[in-house]
Length: 247
Image (cartoon, rainbow, N blue to C red):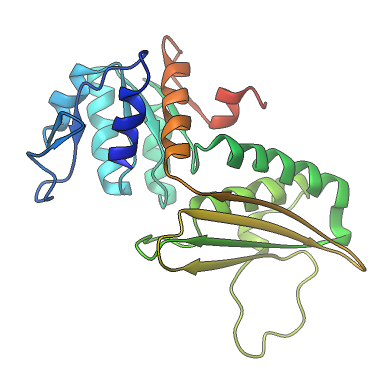
């Protein structure tokens, strides 16, 4: 994602890439990506820009959050896989700086969030819900943050609690499907960028809402759109729906 972000930012005259970071020990450290030298000094990097864009791992994100709070810099966070405690740390930081946190910054994916919510409200409890996602072999968390967000949105629209109705995969003698279950299924392989399909299965008909990302550039462009939107924004925890005016 780092390379895609740098390329997208350098193609937009509204941006200047102030710094690029990677974890200590990474082969990229010290190398130039798009003419920008990759470094490891988080505090120095945070001090040089107006907004910090983070696509890393949860532990890395929290270090970046601390640096941005200290430097009073806005953040765009696209990392997924946070625990409840880690999410709480981000919420606390958002009381001091503006943060856009989203499991997916692609505009098309966020349109699907809205479409899935609308479909759930219309179809109601007469349709079973299953969410299928596919990603490249290197993705380390499952289900994806995007799939979980879809589940949260649909559960809310159906007046359910996701932690009570989520079913992750099925194997063996599972018995009949629970009426209000929301199923999750994760596929990992090759270089799949990201695919998400929500299946609403009813009696005699099936409705599917799907999005397939063909390039990581879609995530980078959405993240930069969020960074622009954050300029001058008051502290708070925002999501891509705020950026796109979908709320």
